[in-house]
Image (cartoon, rainbow, N blue to C red):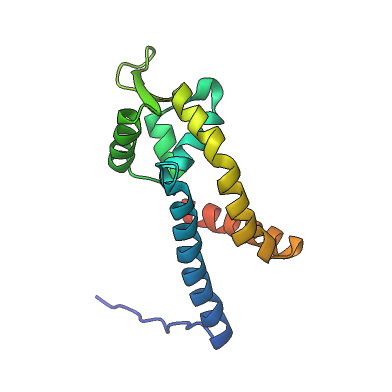
Length: 155
C-alpha cells in the first residue's frame, strides 16, 4: 500500500495572529454574553433556544429540528430542554402526526423572560461586537461565517 504525504500549508504570521485573535475574542465574547444573561437565570445556550422557539410558528419546534438549528447533539438539547422545562420556560409535547416526534414549546413565562433579557443581550452584542467594527467589517464577518457554515455543513 502506497501512501502519499502532502506538505502542511502552515498559516503565515499575519494569519496566525488573526486566527488566535478570533479564538480569544470569540471565547471572551461568549463568556461575557453568558455572564450577562446569568442575572436572568439563563445562559447563552438557553437564550438561543428561547429565541429560536420565539421565532417559530406557534412558538414551537420539533426537538430534532431545534437541535439541528442550534448545532447541538440531541442528547445535549434534551438535557437543556429538561432544565428549561423544570423552570417552566418551555414544555415538551407529543407530535400528533408522528408519535415519535416531540415538540419543544415556549411557555408564556419563557416568552416573558426572553422579552426581559433581550434588551440586555442585544445591548451587549452591540457594545462588545457590532460597535467595535465598521459596517463594512461587520458585513465581512457575516459573509465569512456564512461561508464557513456552508462549507463545514457540507463536510
